Length: 336
Length: 154
Image (cartoon, rainbow over all chains, first blue to last red; front, side, top):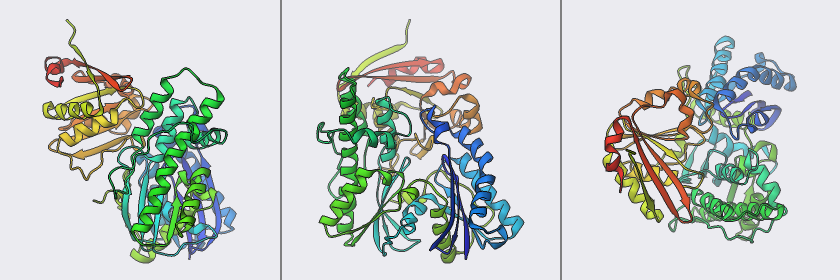
């Protein structure tokens, strides 16, 4: 089965072509980061306009790169949510139009499910069940994945997402958007034990996260002093980053032990953070757990993860209907 | 005569109590502007208002920075907006946020200056300033909210 996957939930227009869930034939991403950087974050209206401009060329490029045409495509998969409504609508309606004109079935998939399954794009493929930590600009959640389509929510953020904390701390420090790569870069030269920023563990046994207090703590620390030397900046970045990855990785390991499962998966944009990959890897190994992460290219938004999620959802539940609508918050994290 | 009221919240607990107090005083259609730097406690205050309004504790009141608007069902609906990333009133209209301003719920709006000409006449403006661990809060009522400002002082 040939699947064409389209993703447009935030500031990346992406498309990929896959054969089943195993062979990636092409993968194209048009990122808007440089456009939004001047505004310090994604501006929804600008994002939507850019998606309109780039969706056709991106899909066309992905098809060309795969040496296939729409006539070869058996299934269309598209992100239905969560994300920015205006941005999502462009991907979904573009997909519906192809579906109608070319008579190809389509499935609307959840962006979070896509991130969670992006690990199957790597060499080291996990076995079900596994505990997955999905951390990005909009989400920080822990799931217990029982199959390609069944995910049990174990924990989620109570205030800010991990990636959002990176963006906001970058702003406090006067670093450009997006904050993740910038802070990670600065942190390389810093001492992660220099400043003891608080870890929010919440009540015992909780797999929820909270990063708002940490952000406040960094703001207080930075505003207390006039110092802005490169060393100061590097130490704040390293210590802040450590506070985030410490909690994310510790809770992922605890969740795996709680569910008595051997496999941990890391996914989402924050999964590209080298310190998180390193620390979670170490902690999993010392706890006797296997760890799997997507290749760096597939941590951020992409069409390939939507192909995989769509393929399995289609096999499980069949196609979506034309009255499918987009949504801004994921049903996967609204349980409980 | 100024209708501004200034007071100090000396701890996180004070902020939470203030939020609960706001929840006990609001009526349908009230609009609250929330100004303050990152880390001033806008999220904490909004959470306290929400739980004070009867939003179930199992429903987390999270930052709307990414998705711009979150809607919660309590005894009154709560609409929590973060307009930081919007370019101006045209975008607010395009997203349909204007409807929420004149709805039956309570609107809590961060970065309200993005509303431009849409800034409603009747509103309570809460400014939060950080002073070490304490927060200096200034309440200013506009329009019909002027006569009710004092009710919101904890």
